[in-house]
Structures are given as structure tokens and as C-alpha cells.
Image (tube, rainbow, N blue to C red; front, side, top):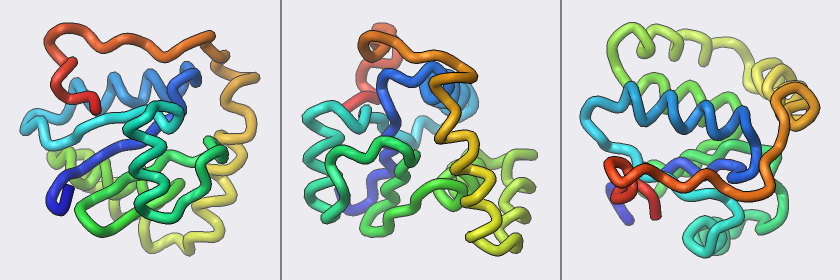
Length: 132
């Protein structure tokens, strides 16, 4: 897991699913692996990093031994996607409390605005190996 780039996401959140699909589409080098926060793999990664096992209000990006949350996680993922997405990393200069406040508004309202599923979306056969 040392050099793996893993995205942990809320598996029943429609917005989170769209985000995962976006990353899958734009990750041309296929560097990211994915796991829902609720899955066995996600729970193991959370436990290994001494993170809460029941708080699914944050997108978590594990890059080797570094763990990023909320807006910082999103910006690092966009940076890793490269191309024009890399420019969004310039937003890192905005103080984290401000970025995370905006992120928290989205996280708090994501079910109301985008809906919720009864279960996680199953990966396609083409992307299955990218999910833990």
C-alpha cells in the first residue's frame, strides 16, 4: 500500500458516485484505486490510519503514507489527474478552514441535493480491477 493512491468515498451517495466516475474517466494513467468507506477494504484502510469508521462526510485520499481529507483531498486528486485539472491545485492557497467550510456545506447537503442509493454501484467489468 506504500505507493498506492486510494480514494475512499461514500458508496451510497450519488454525488460521490459521479465523482468516482469522473476520476475513472480522466485518470488516463489508471493510478487510482477505489473503495467505498463502508466496504471491508475501506474500513480496513480507515482503521489502519486510525480514522473514524462511521463518519462518511469526507472524501478520503490515501497517497502512500499520506492521508488527505475534504477539499485538500479533492485538490490533490485533481492535481494528480494532470492536464488542465492540475491548475485547480492553485486553490490550495485559500486557507483550509475556508475551503473545508465550503466542502462541508456540500457534504452536509449531498443526499438532499443529489440523492442517495440503497447500495453501492457495482463497477463495470472494465473498471473492476480498480476497486478494492
